Length: 282
Image (tube, rainbow, N blue to C red; front, side, top):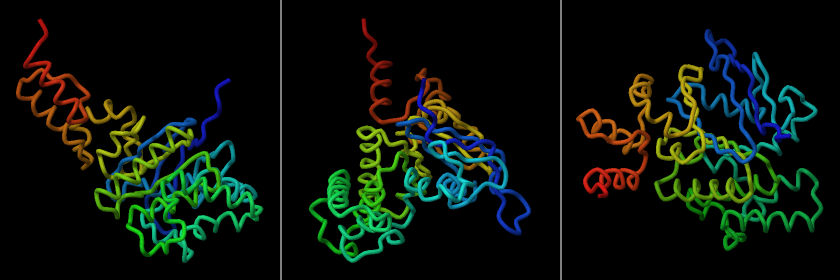
């Protein structure tokens, strides 16, 4: 029997106090063990509201959210839910609470009363997983944005989560920082089997996911593999979203009469396809 979904949102709606319309309306989402799901949407689309619902920071106005089978409405399971589904926020400074990296990673474990020897082992393992062991005795304010975000991820990893929910986790980072954080999360997804919900407005980041879900005006409007979603160039533009540069270029070339295959997302794929057309095999 297949393992249950790590995260399951069932016809979820959420309305903020005094708001006339819901921020989310009848949104359903299932995340499988080891799956990497990207959620795209313009500002105000509801994607950050969805992130907070998946971590029980909010509870739905309608519908329900299950995290590893636990209902987020169950106050008695709140700590278990947040341990199972760790949250990475946009600004890493908001997650760092200690004066040394090692102490920061220890913070959540201390609150849980984890025994000292086990705590040391978990901290070491978490720092190693994000390649930050050499900075264990460093003050967080001395780190780059990407390094701070990796420390925040280490603090979550020490709690041994089954899921990571990243709410615009690279939005405040430079390209180098974005790359190192995304690479770290992908490696954890691949090597540790951690399920990931990656909320972003960077199309190239979404293109690396197993599946892409597009939210607009509080509703799901597209869902599928990156190739399936980013082929819908006109639909994406209708909701004021872009597509990866190579997907856009491929559509322009097809519209001009060049018989490129569908689903091109990267420079390497474009190069390979153009070479195939210009130098067909005999």
